Image (cartoon, rainbow, N blue to C red):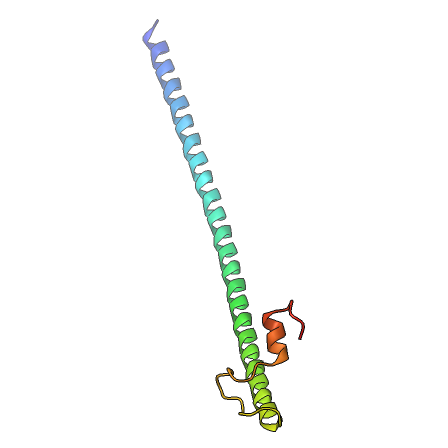
Length: 114
């Protein structure tokens, strides 16, 4: 083999090697970009989920506040009823341990007959 053929083979081999390296770098850059897109999508999904969780938390706090107000209203009505009822010896105190209404018993034990 002549020197010219050997030089041509080496140059072609270097060109093939350079093309392979260039292709590998492009493939790596493309994979990095795909991962960036996936990460951004995941971040957006996480933010959306966090917003939904916050809305649910606020709604549950509001519902708890409504329930507290209703319970206070019911307690006040129960106290008023106990004050007016001639069959109740002592008025109901704030601890709710004196008066045990039929509705409260039914709520605690739905299988009982009131």
